[in-house]
Length: 159
Image (spheres, rainbow, N blue to C red):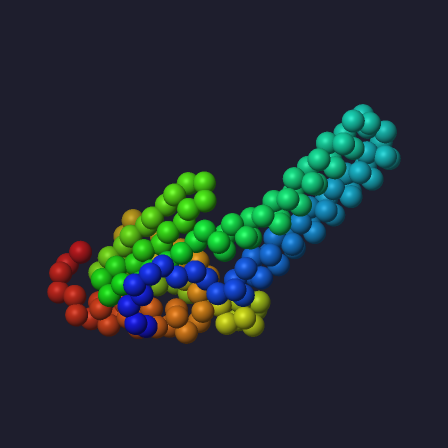
């Protein structure tokens, strides 16, 4: 992987994955809300509760439509030959920087949907922190692992 001089975003397929994940979560909450409305009608609960249920359902729908876009639009990563940077900024600005020599373990995980779209979740584990990347392409994750291992072979310091 050549050195990235600018921050990279997840591939477009990652946004589709985020929307699918939130859509499934919304479907589960919809089933719960339908059960609550059935119980409301069956047990003659206070009539105002149906408006509370509908309001919560609308908030959940808005959340399911906005959060995937926010996760995709405001998460970036940059890999340098000496360090890794992960930047997230929407409400709270966060920039995490880790030297490659601090890495103890690189964990990649995937599921059937991510495998279908060629994406992986990559997590760097150090002595005191875990740093999770935005979704990456499988080839980029493999190249990052190779870069980190090649760098760690040449490190002489004891960290």
